[in-house]
Image (cartoon, protein in one colour):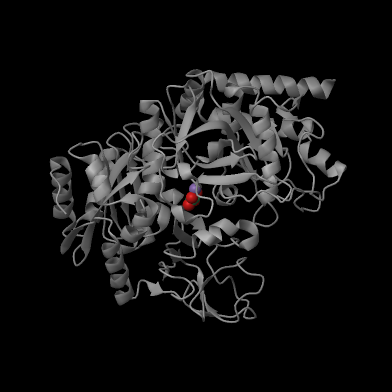
Length: 589
Ligand code: OXD
Ligand code: MN
């Protein structure tokens, strides 16, 4: 492939001079090229063919055992000052980090092919999409990028001669955890990632570009780059309304994004626009519109089943790449929770023989993944490719709270909603090792992904609310409330539709709420519970707001706000004071 883009050409030359690859391959994104990449990996053993009769076009990759997840402690935001990156990020000065990384990248592609991967985040025709170029020495990365993004010639054509592209440099290095760095330079819109081949560290279009770099760019250009799914809900009259929702990693975003409404919701349909990232901006009509910058799903496999997420399972049945799952003796991918009965024999994610009775650990790594084309989802929204995106009625925040947070509440207004999102958190449960009930804050589910100081990020959110009187309403949900025995009291999955319907009705002013100190909760009997086996007492518990628990929560919130010193906007402290007052009013009444 050729390009007339001089800025791109000279950057590629520069990188080649530094990394000294044996070959340079410009990726076009064609099927033939993808097939050749797969053949190459089948040839050198880094990819394995799955049962092509049952899983056509599906392949399997086992990553290095020490390279199976994002590495937050090795992820850096390199802004001029430490304060710009904020206490929410690891920081290093750009020149110091570049010097260190230049040493690592020097000659690192000797004996390898350097792939130049042009990609477009968002529909190619959308004025809101952004082009990036990832240079990588991993054919696995190039193949995954073809599923996850609009890759190749189409991106290069969109770029034309513009210098406005994110420069992402990636090498797997020696996959040595002691020589691993995932670094972002938001000012120059660059990413330098060394030493990991795993998804979020290596597929630079996703977390690195579409969240960390894009969040900083969005702040500068008055839009928003968020860790949110985008879901359309169509009522029996054929009207579709859209919500976005932010949950921390592994809290069921992919499940909610492809939800199947319960049988009682006849004539309703859910449409998936995106399962992980939303780019949002106001259009001329004053409404906030969202596009999904990605073109694929990079989903957590364990727990995905016909019962929990039939649509995800349908999406990944062909043309998908599986990483670190198990493989059965029939050559099929398998993971814990996929089927009721485990396979009699499999090879586990480490490459060892596995049988259910051997019982020496899981067959699939808990963070094993599928990479599947989003268009294969049976409920892929026809708007997935819409250049304008979809108008958003409600923004939903959530976490995993065993206690404290009710099933759903509505923020009083945008400013309060920003506070609610900023305080989103999850509690550790008995299911995980370590102390029970420890609260981990994950503001807007962006803790690992915000490319700048959270104080400035909240200020940006506050500013976005002031830009329009048609800003979406903001809600908080908690699917994970437990009883005293640690049992979940809300059925979740498809039944979350009932909560979403209440949210949509609130947006249209069609249902009632009761004011509590933390926000508006559903008035009795306003959530449709027909067909769910749940008693009145449990519903009360689900929607309950206990002032004592919230007073304890308040202390944690204060501590969080203080961490950001002068950077924390005054409005956030005002919200804290108001919440404190409302809580003390109910405890003294
Ligand atoms: C993801 C994550 O991979 O949030 O989407 O970790
Ligand atoms: Mn995510």
